Image (tube, rainbow over all chains, first blue to last red; front, side, top):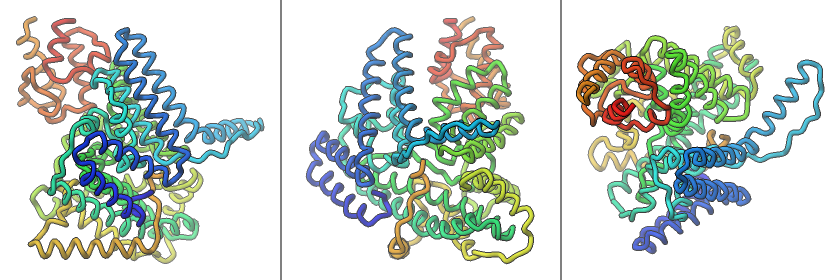
Length: 477
Length: 78
């Protein structure tokens, strides 16, 4: 089931009513309801893969208990490796098996040796990268002593499968989320209103902006060989805005849905398209994944390479971005995408201009300064170029797209109307930029005006939903 | 070295690495309190601290530091 399908708007009100009006006095009953609802939500797509969610849950619950009970450091480490090994094997099989087999066969074929094709027909389970990472973070945190292992299996199972963020994040941390599951929740009217507004804003970004731009992007990337340079630039820009609205829209709906159930999920996007530097961009884009990689990969790797000083940090950054690329998908284009983004980060390490506190751009002002505007444009341009690798289905297509972009100077400019969506997104993001969890566009003016804006936005979303459901881009990961 | 001497020397290292002469550390100071103290600069801080105090920490010990006080404890116990 997805947030933008009509069935969700039957499912969620039912859960909401049962949760707050039937089971409101019984925490355990509320958690059972959330667990059943989450498995129903996931099973709506394919019930067979519920066994994988259940496996990850039982595995990390058990490993957490065993690690917590063990005092011998070596045995604790061994148990952690078992947990990580099993989780990553599951992910590796379902997501990467065919990629490795194909790459292996192709590598031998390039030197004239023909190996048998041993690829399998494997369906990628929805959200496997998200819930596996979420579940693994629990074992890692117990091992590092940041968290006491939980005894209550129901609460842990609810944490792993919580339906608002199960299939596409934000990737929650047990240390942040588990205390919310184990404590009674009370309905807060203002939190509920904020949740609905955030859901509406997320739906608008997904259904109106991302899905309409997706039509142009699909046509431009499919026929890139016959498109002019400017059309191809537009195609890349449209994809940048599409993927941002698609994914941040999903996150907003997830956070809003969770708010209506009395939970606070972590922010996942903080206006990354307004970032003024590459490090700032990565502190604003897919925050739950970048902080996960930062805590569990970059930090230990960079510390173990610290004798190499800045070179060690640069190497750790490249490794982290490489893993980030592979996390996104089993394709060489994602590997290159990850590496290019890592390389774009390196100059900041060399200059010593590392991650700065990401202040709101032009806070309290109407417009950015010229320098800020140029910085935003530069980061947006570089990010847009890297996303060509992200969108292209193969490396030859990506390189062909760049080549056509650099050489097809003549020809008509097609799909110009998409610019309207880009401009609308930038204007609204600029207005909202001070608080990603409380869209300002829905809070401006007197009550009557606000209601008119909310109603207007709802109608636009509804009519766009009628044109058919388009899958979220990040469901492929 | 005494607790206060370690704190003063740590402050020097922080000021040098983060290029900010106004930094004032207390045992309760965390990364949230110091502009620029993030996961990237943290590695450079560790390198400089190890050099300044001529100590070598285990990665796990470093990852358990939650505040400047934890650093001081590690340095005094090393």
